[in-house]
Image 1: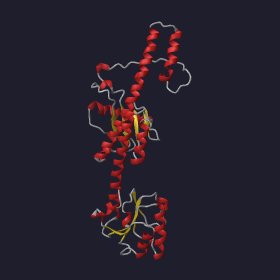
Image 2 (image 1 turned 90 degrees about the horizontal axis):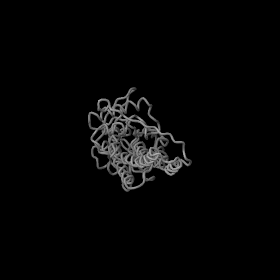
Image 3 (image 1 turned 90 degrees about the vertical axis):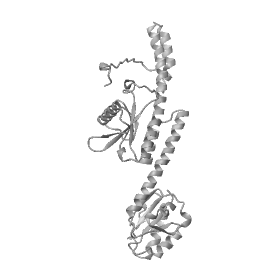
Image 4 (image 1 turned 45 degrees about the vertical axis):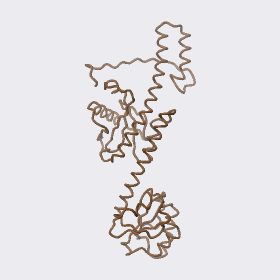
Length: 333
């Protein structure tokens, strides 16, 4: 958000005392402090709120403002209640350092200003992240795959402070935050996702976990379009977010659904690559079943190795495993 938006909101009761030419500065956060030197808590772009308790005399304003300007804050908002007005020496110091200065009416709580700024900044960050996610979706749809799910999950962590993991239907972790989920928790989440899928409840599915906390589960479905749950119940992925989506605005829900769709694009790419590998493997099996000479089978395996086992420089030792799923009574478990 821009500084001028603070003046456009009458409920905040802010008056601009200096810095008219700097009102296009971007506000990235808000901080309340009465420390004489709050620099260790500043990262730049903040609206700093202060009750002026740090000021014991006119000489204190210059060093305080110099510290704020050096930290790159967006503006200073000083409460009028403490000193029954804003000292002239503070106005002068802010003008000298080109730091916009607002006066906060004594009837306005700092909490109200903080809540407004946080809400505005959070909404804008969600919109910015949505644009980034959409750009990633277009790139992944038209070009080669990149880092897969981890790339977009990193965006969720850095921009929205959301920890999220992509899990398979059996709870296997496909991608996610730096800290892996415990195996038991992954299994519980996978079971909850399958149970919700069978009832066709709309996502996200909210799951309370042992030890406190709630996860929100978003399905990640490929474009197979199968209507039979048995075709996907053991292969679908889902996005597990360590947060309660029941408290989210519609914009954030739409964003997370977009993230799930983006991950589905990567999943489709992986499935396409698996289809190629399956076709090559089938050709090898047909050679074996048809009694082809060992030399021919070996040559075919060597030729198929770069596709069947990407990244392997030498021909591996092959082991073939065959499995089958039997549905009890024809019903999905």
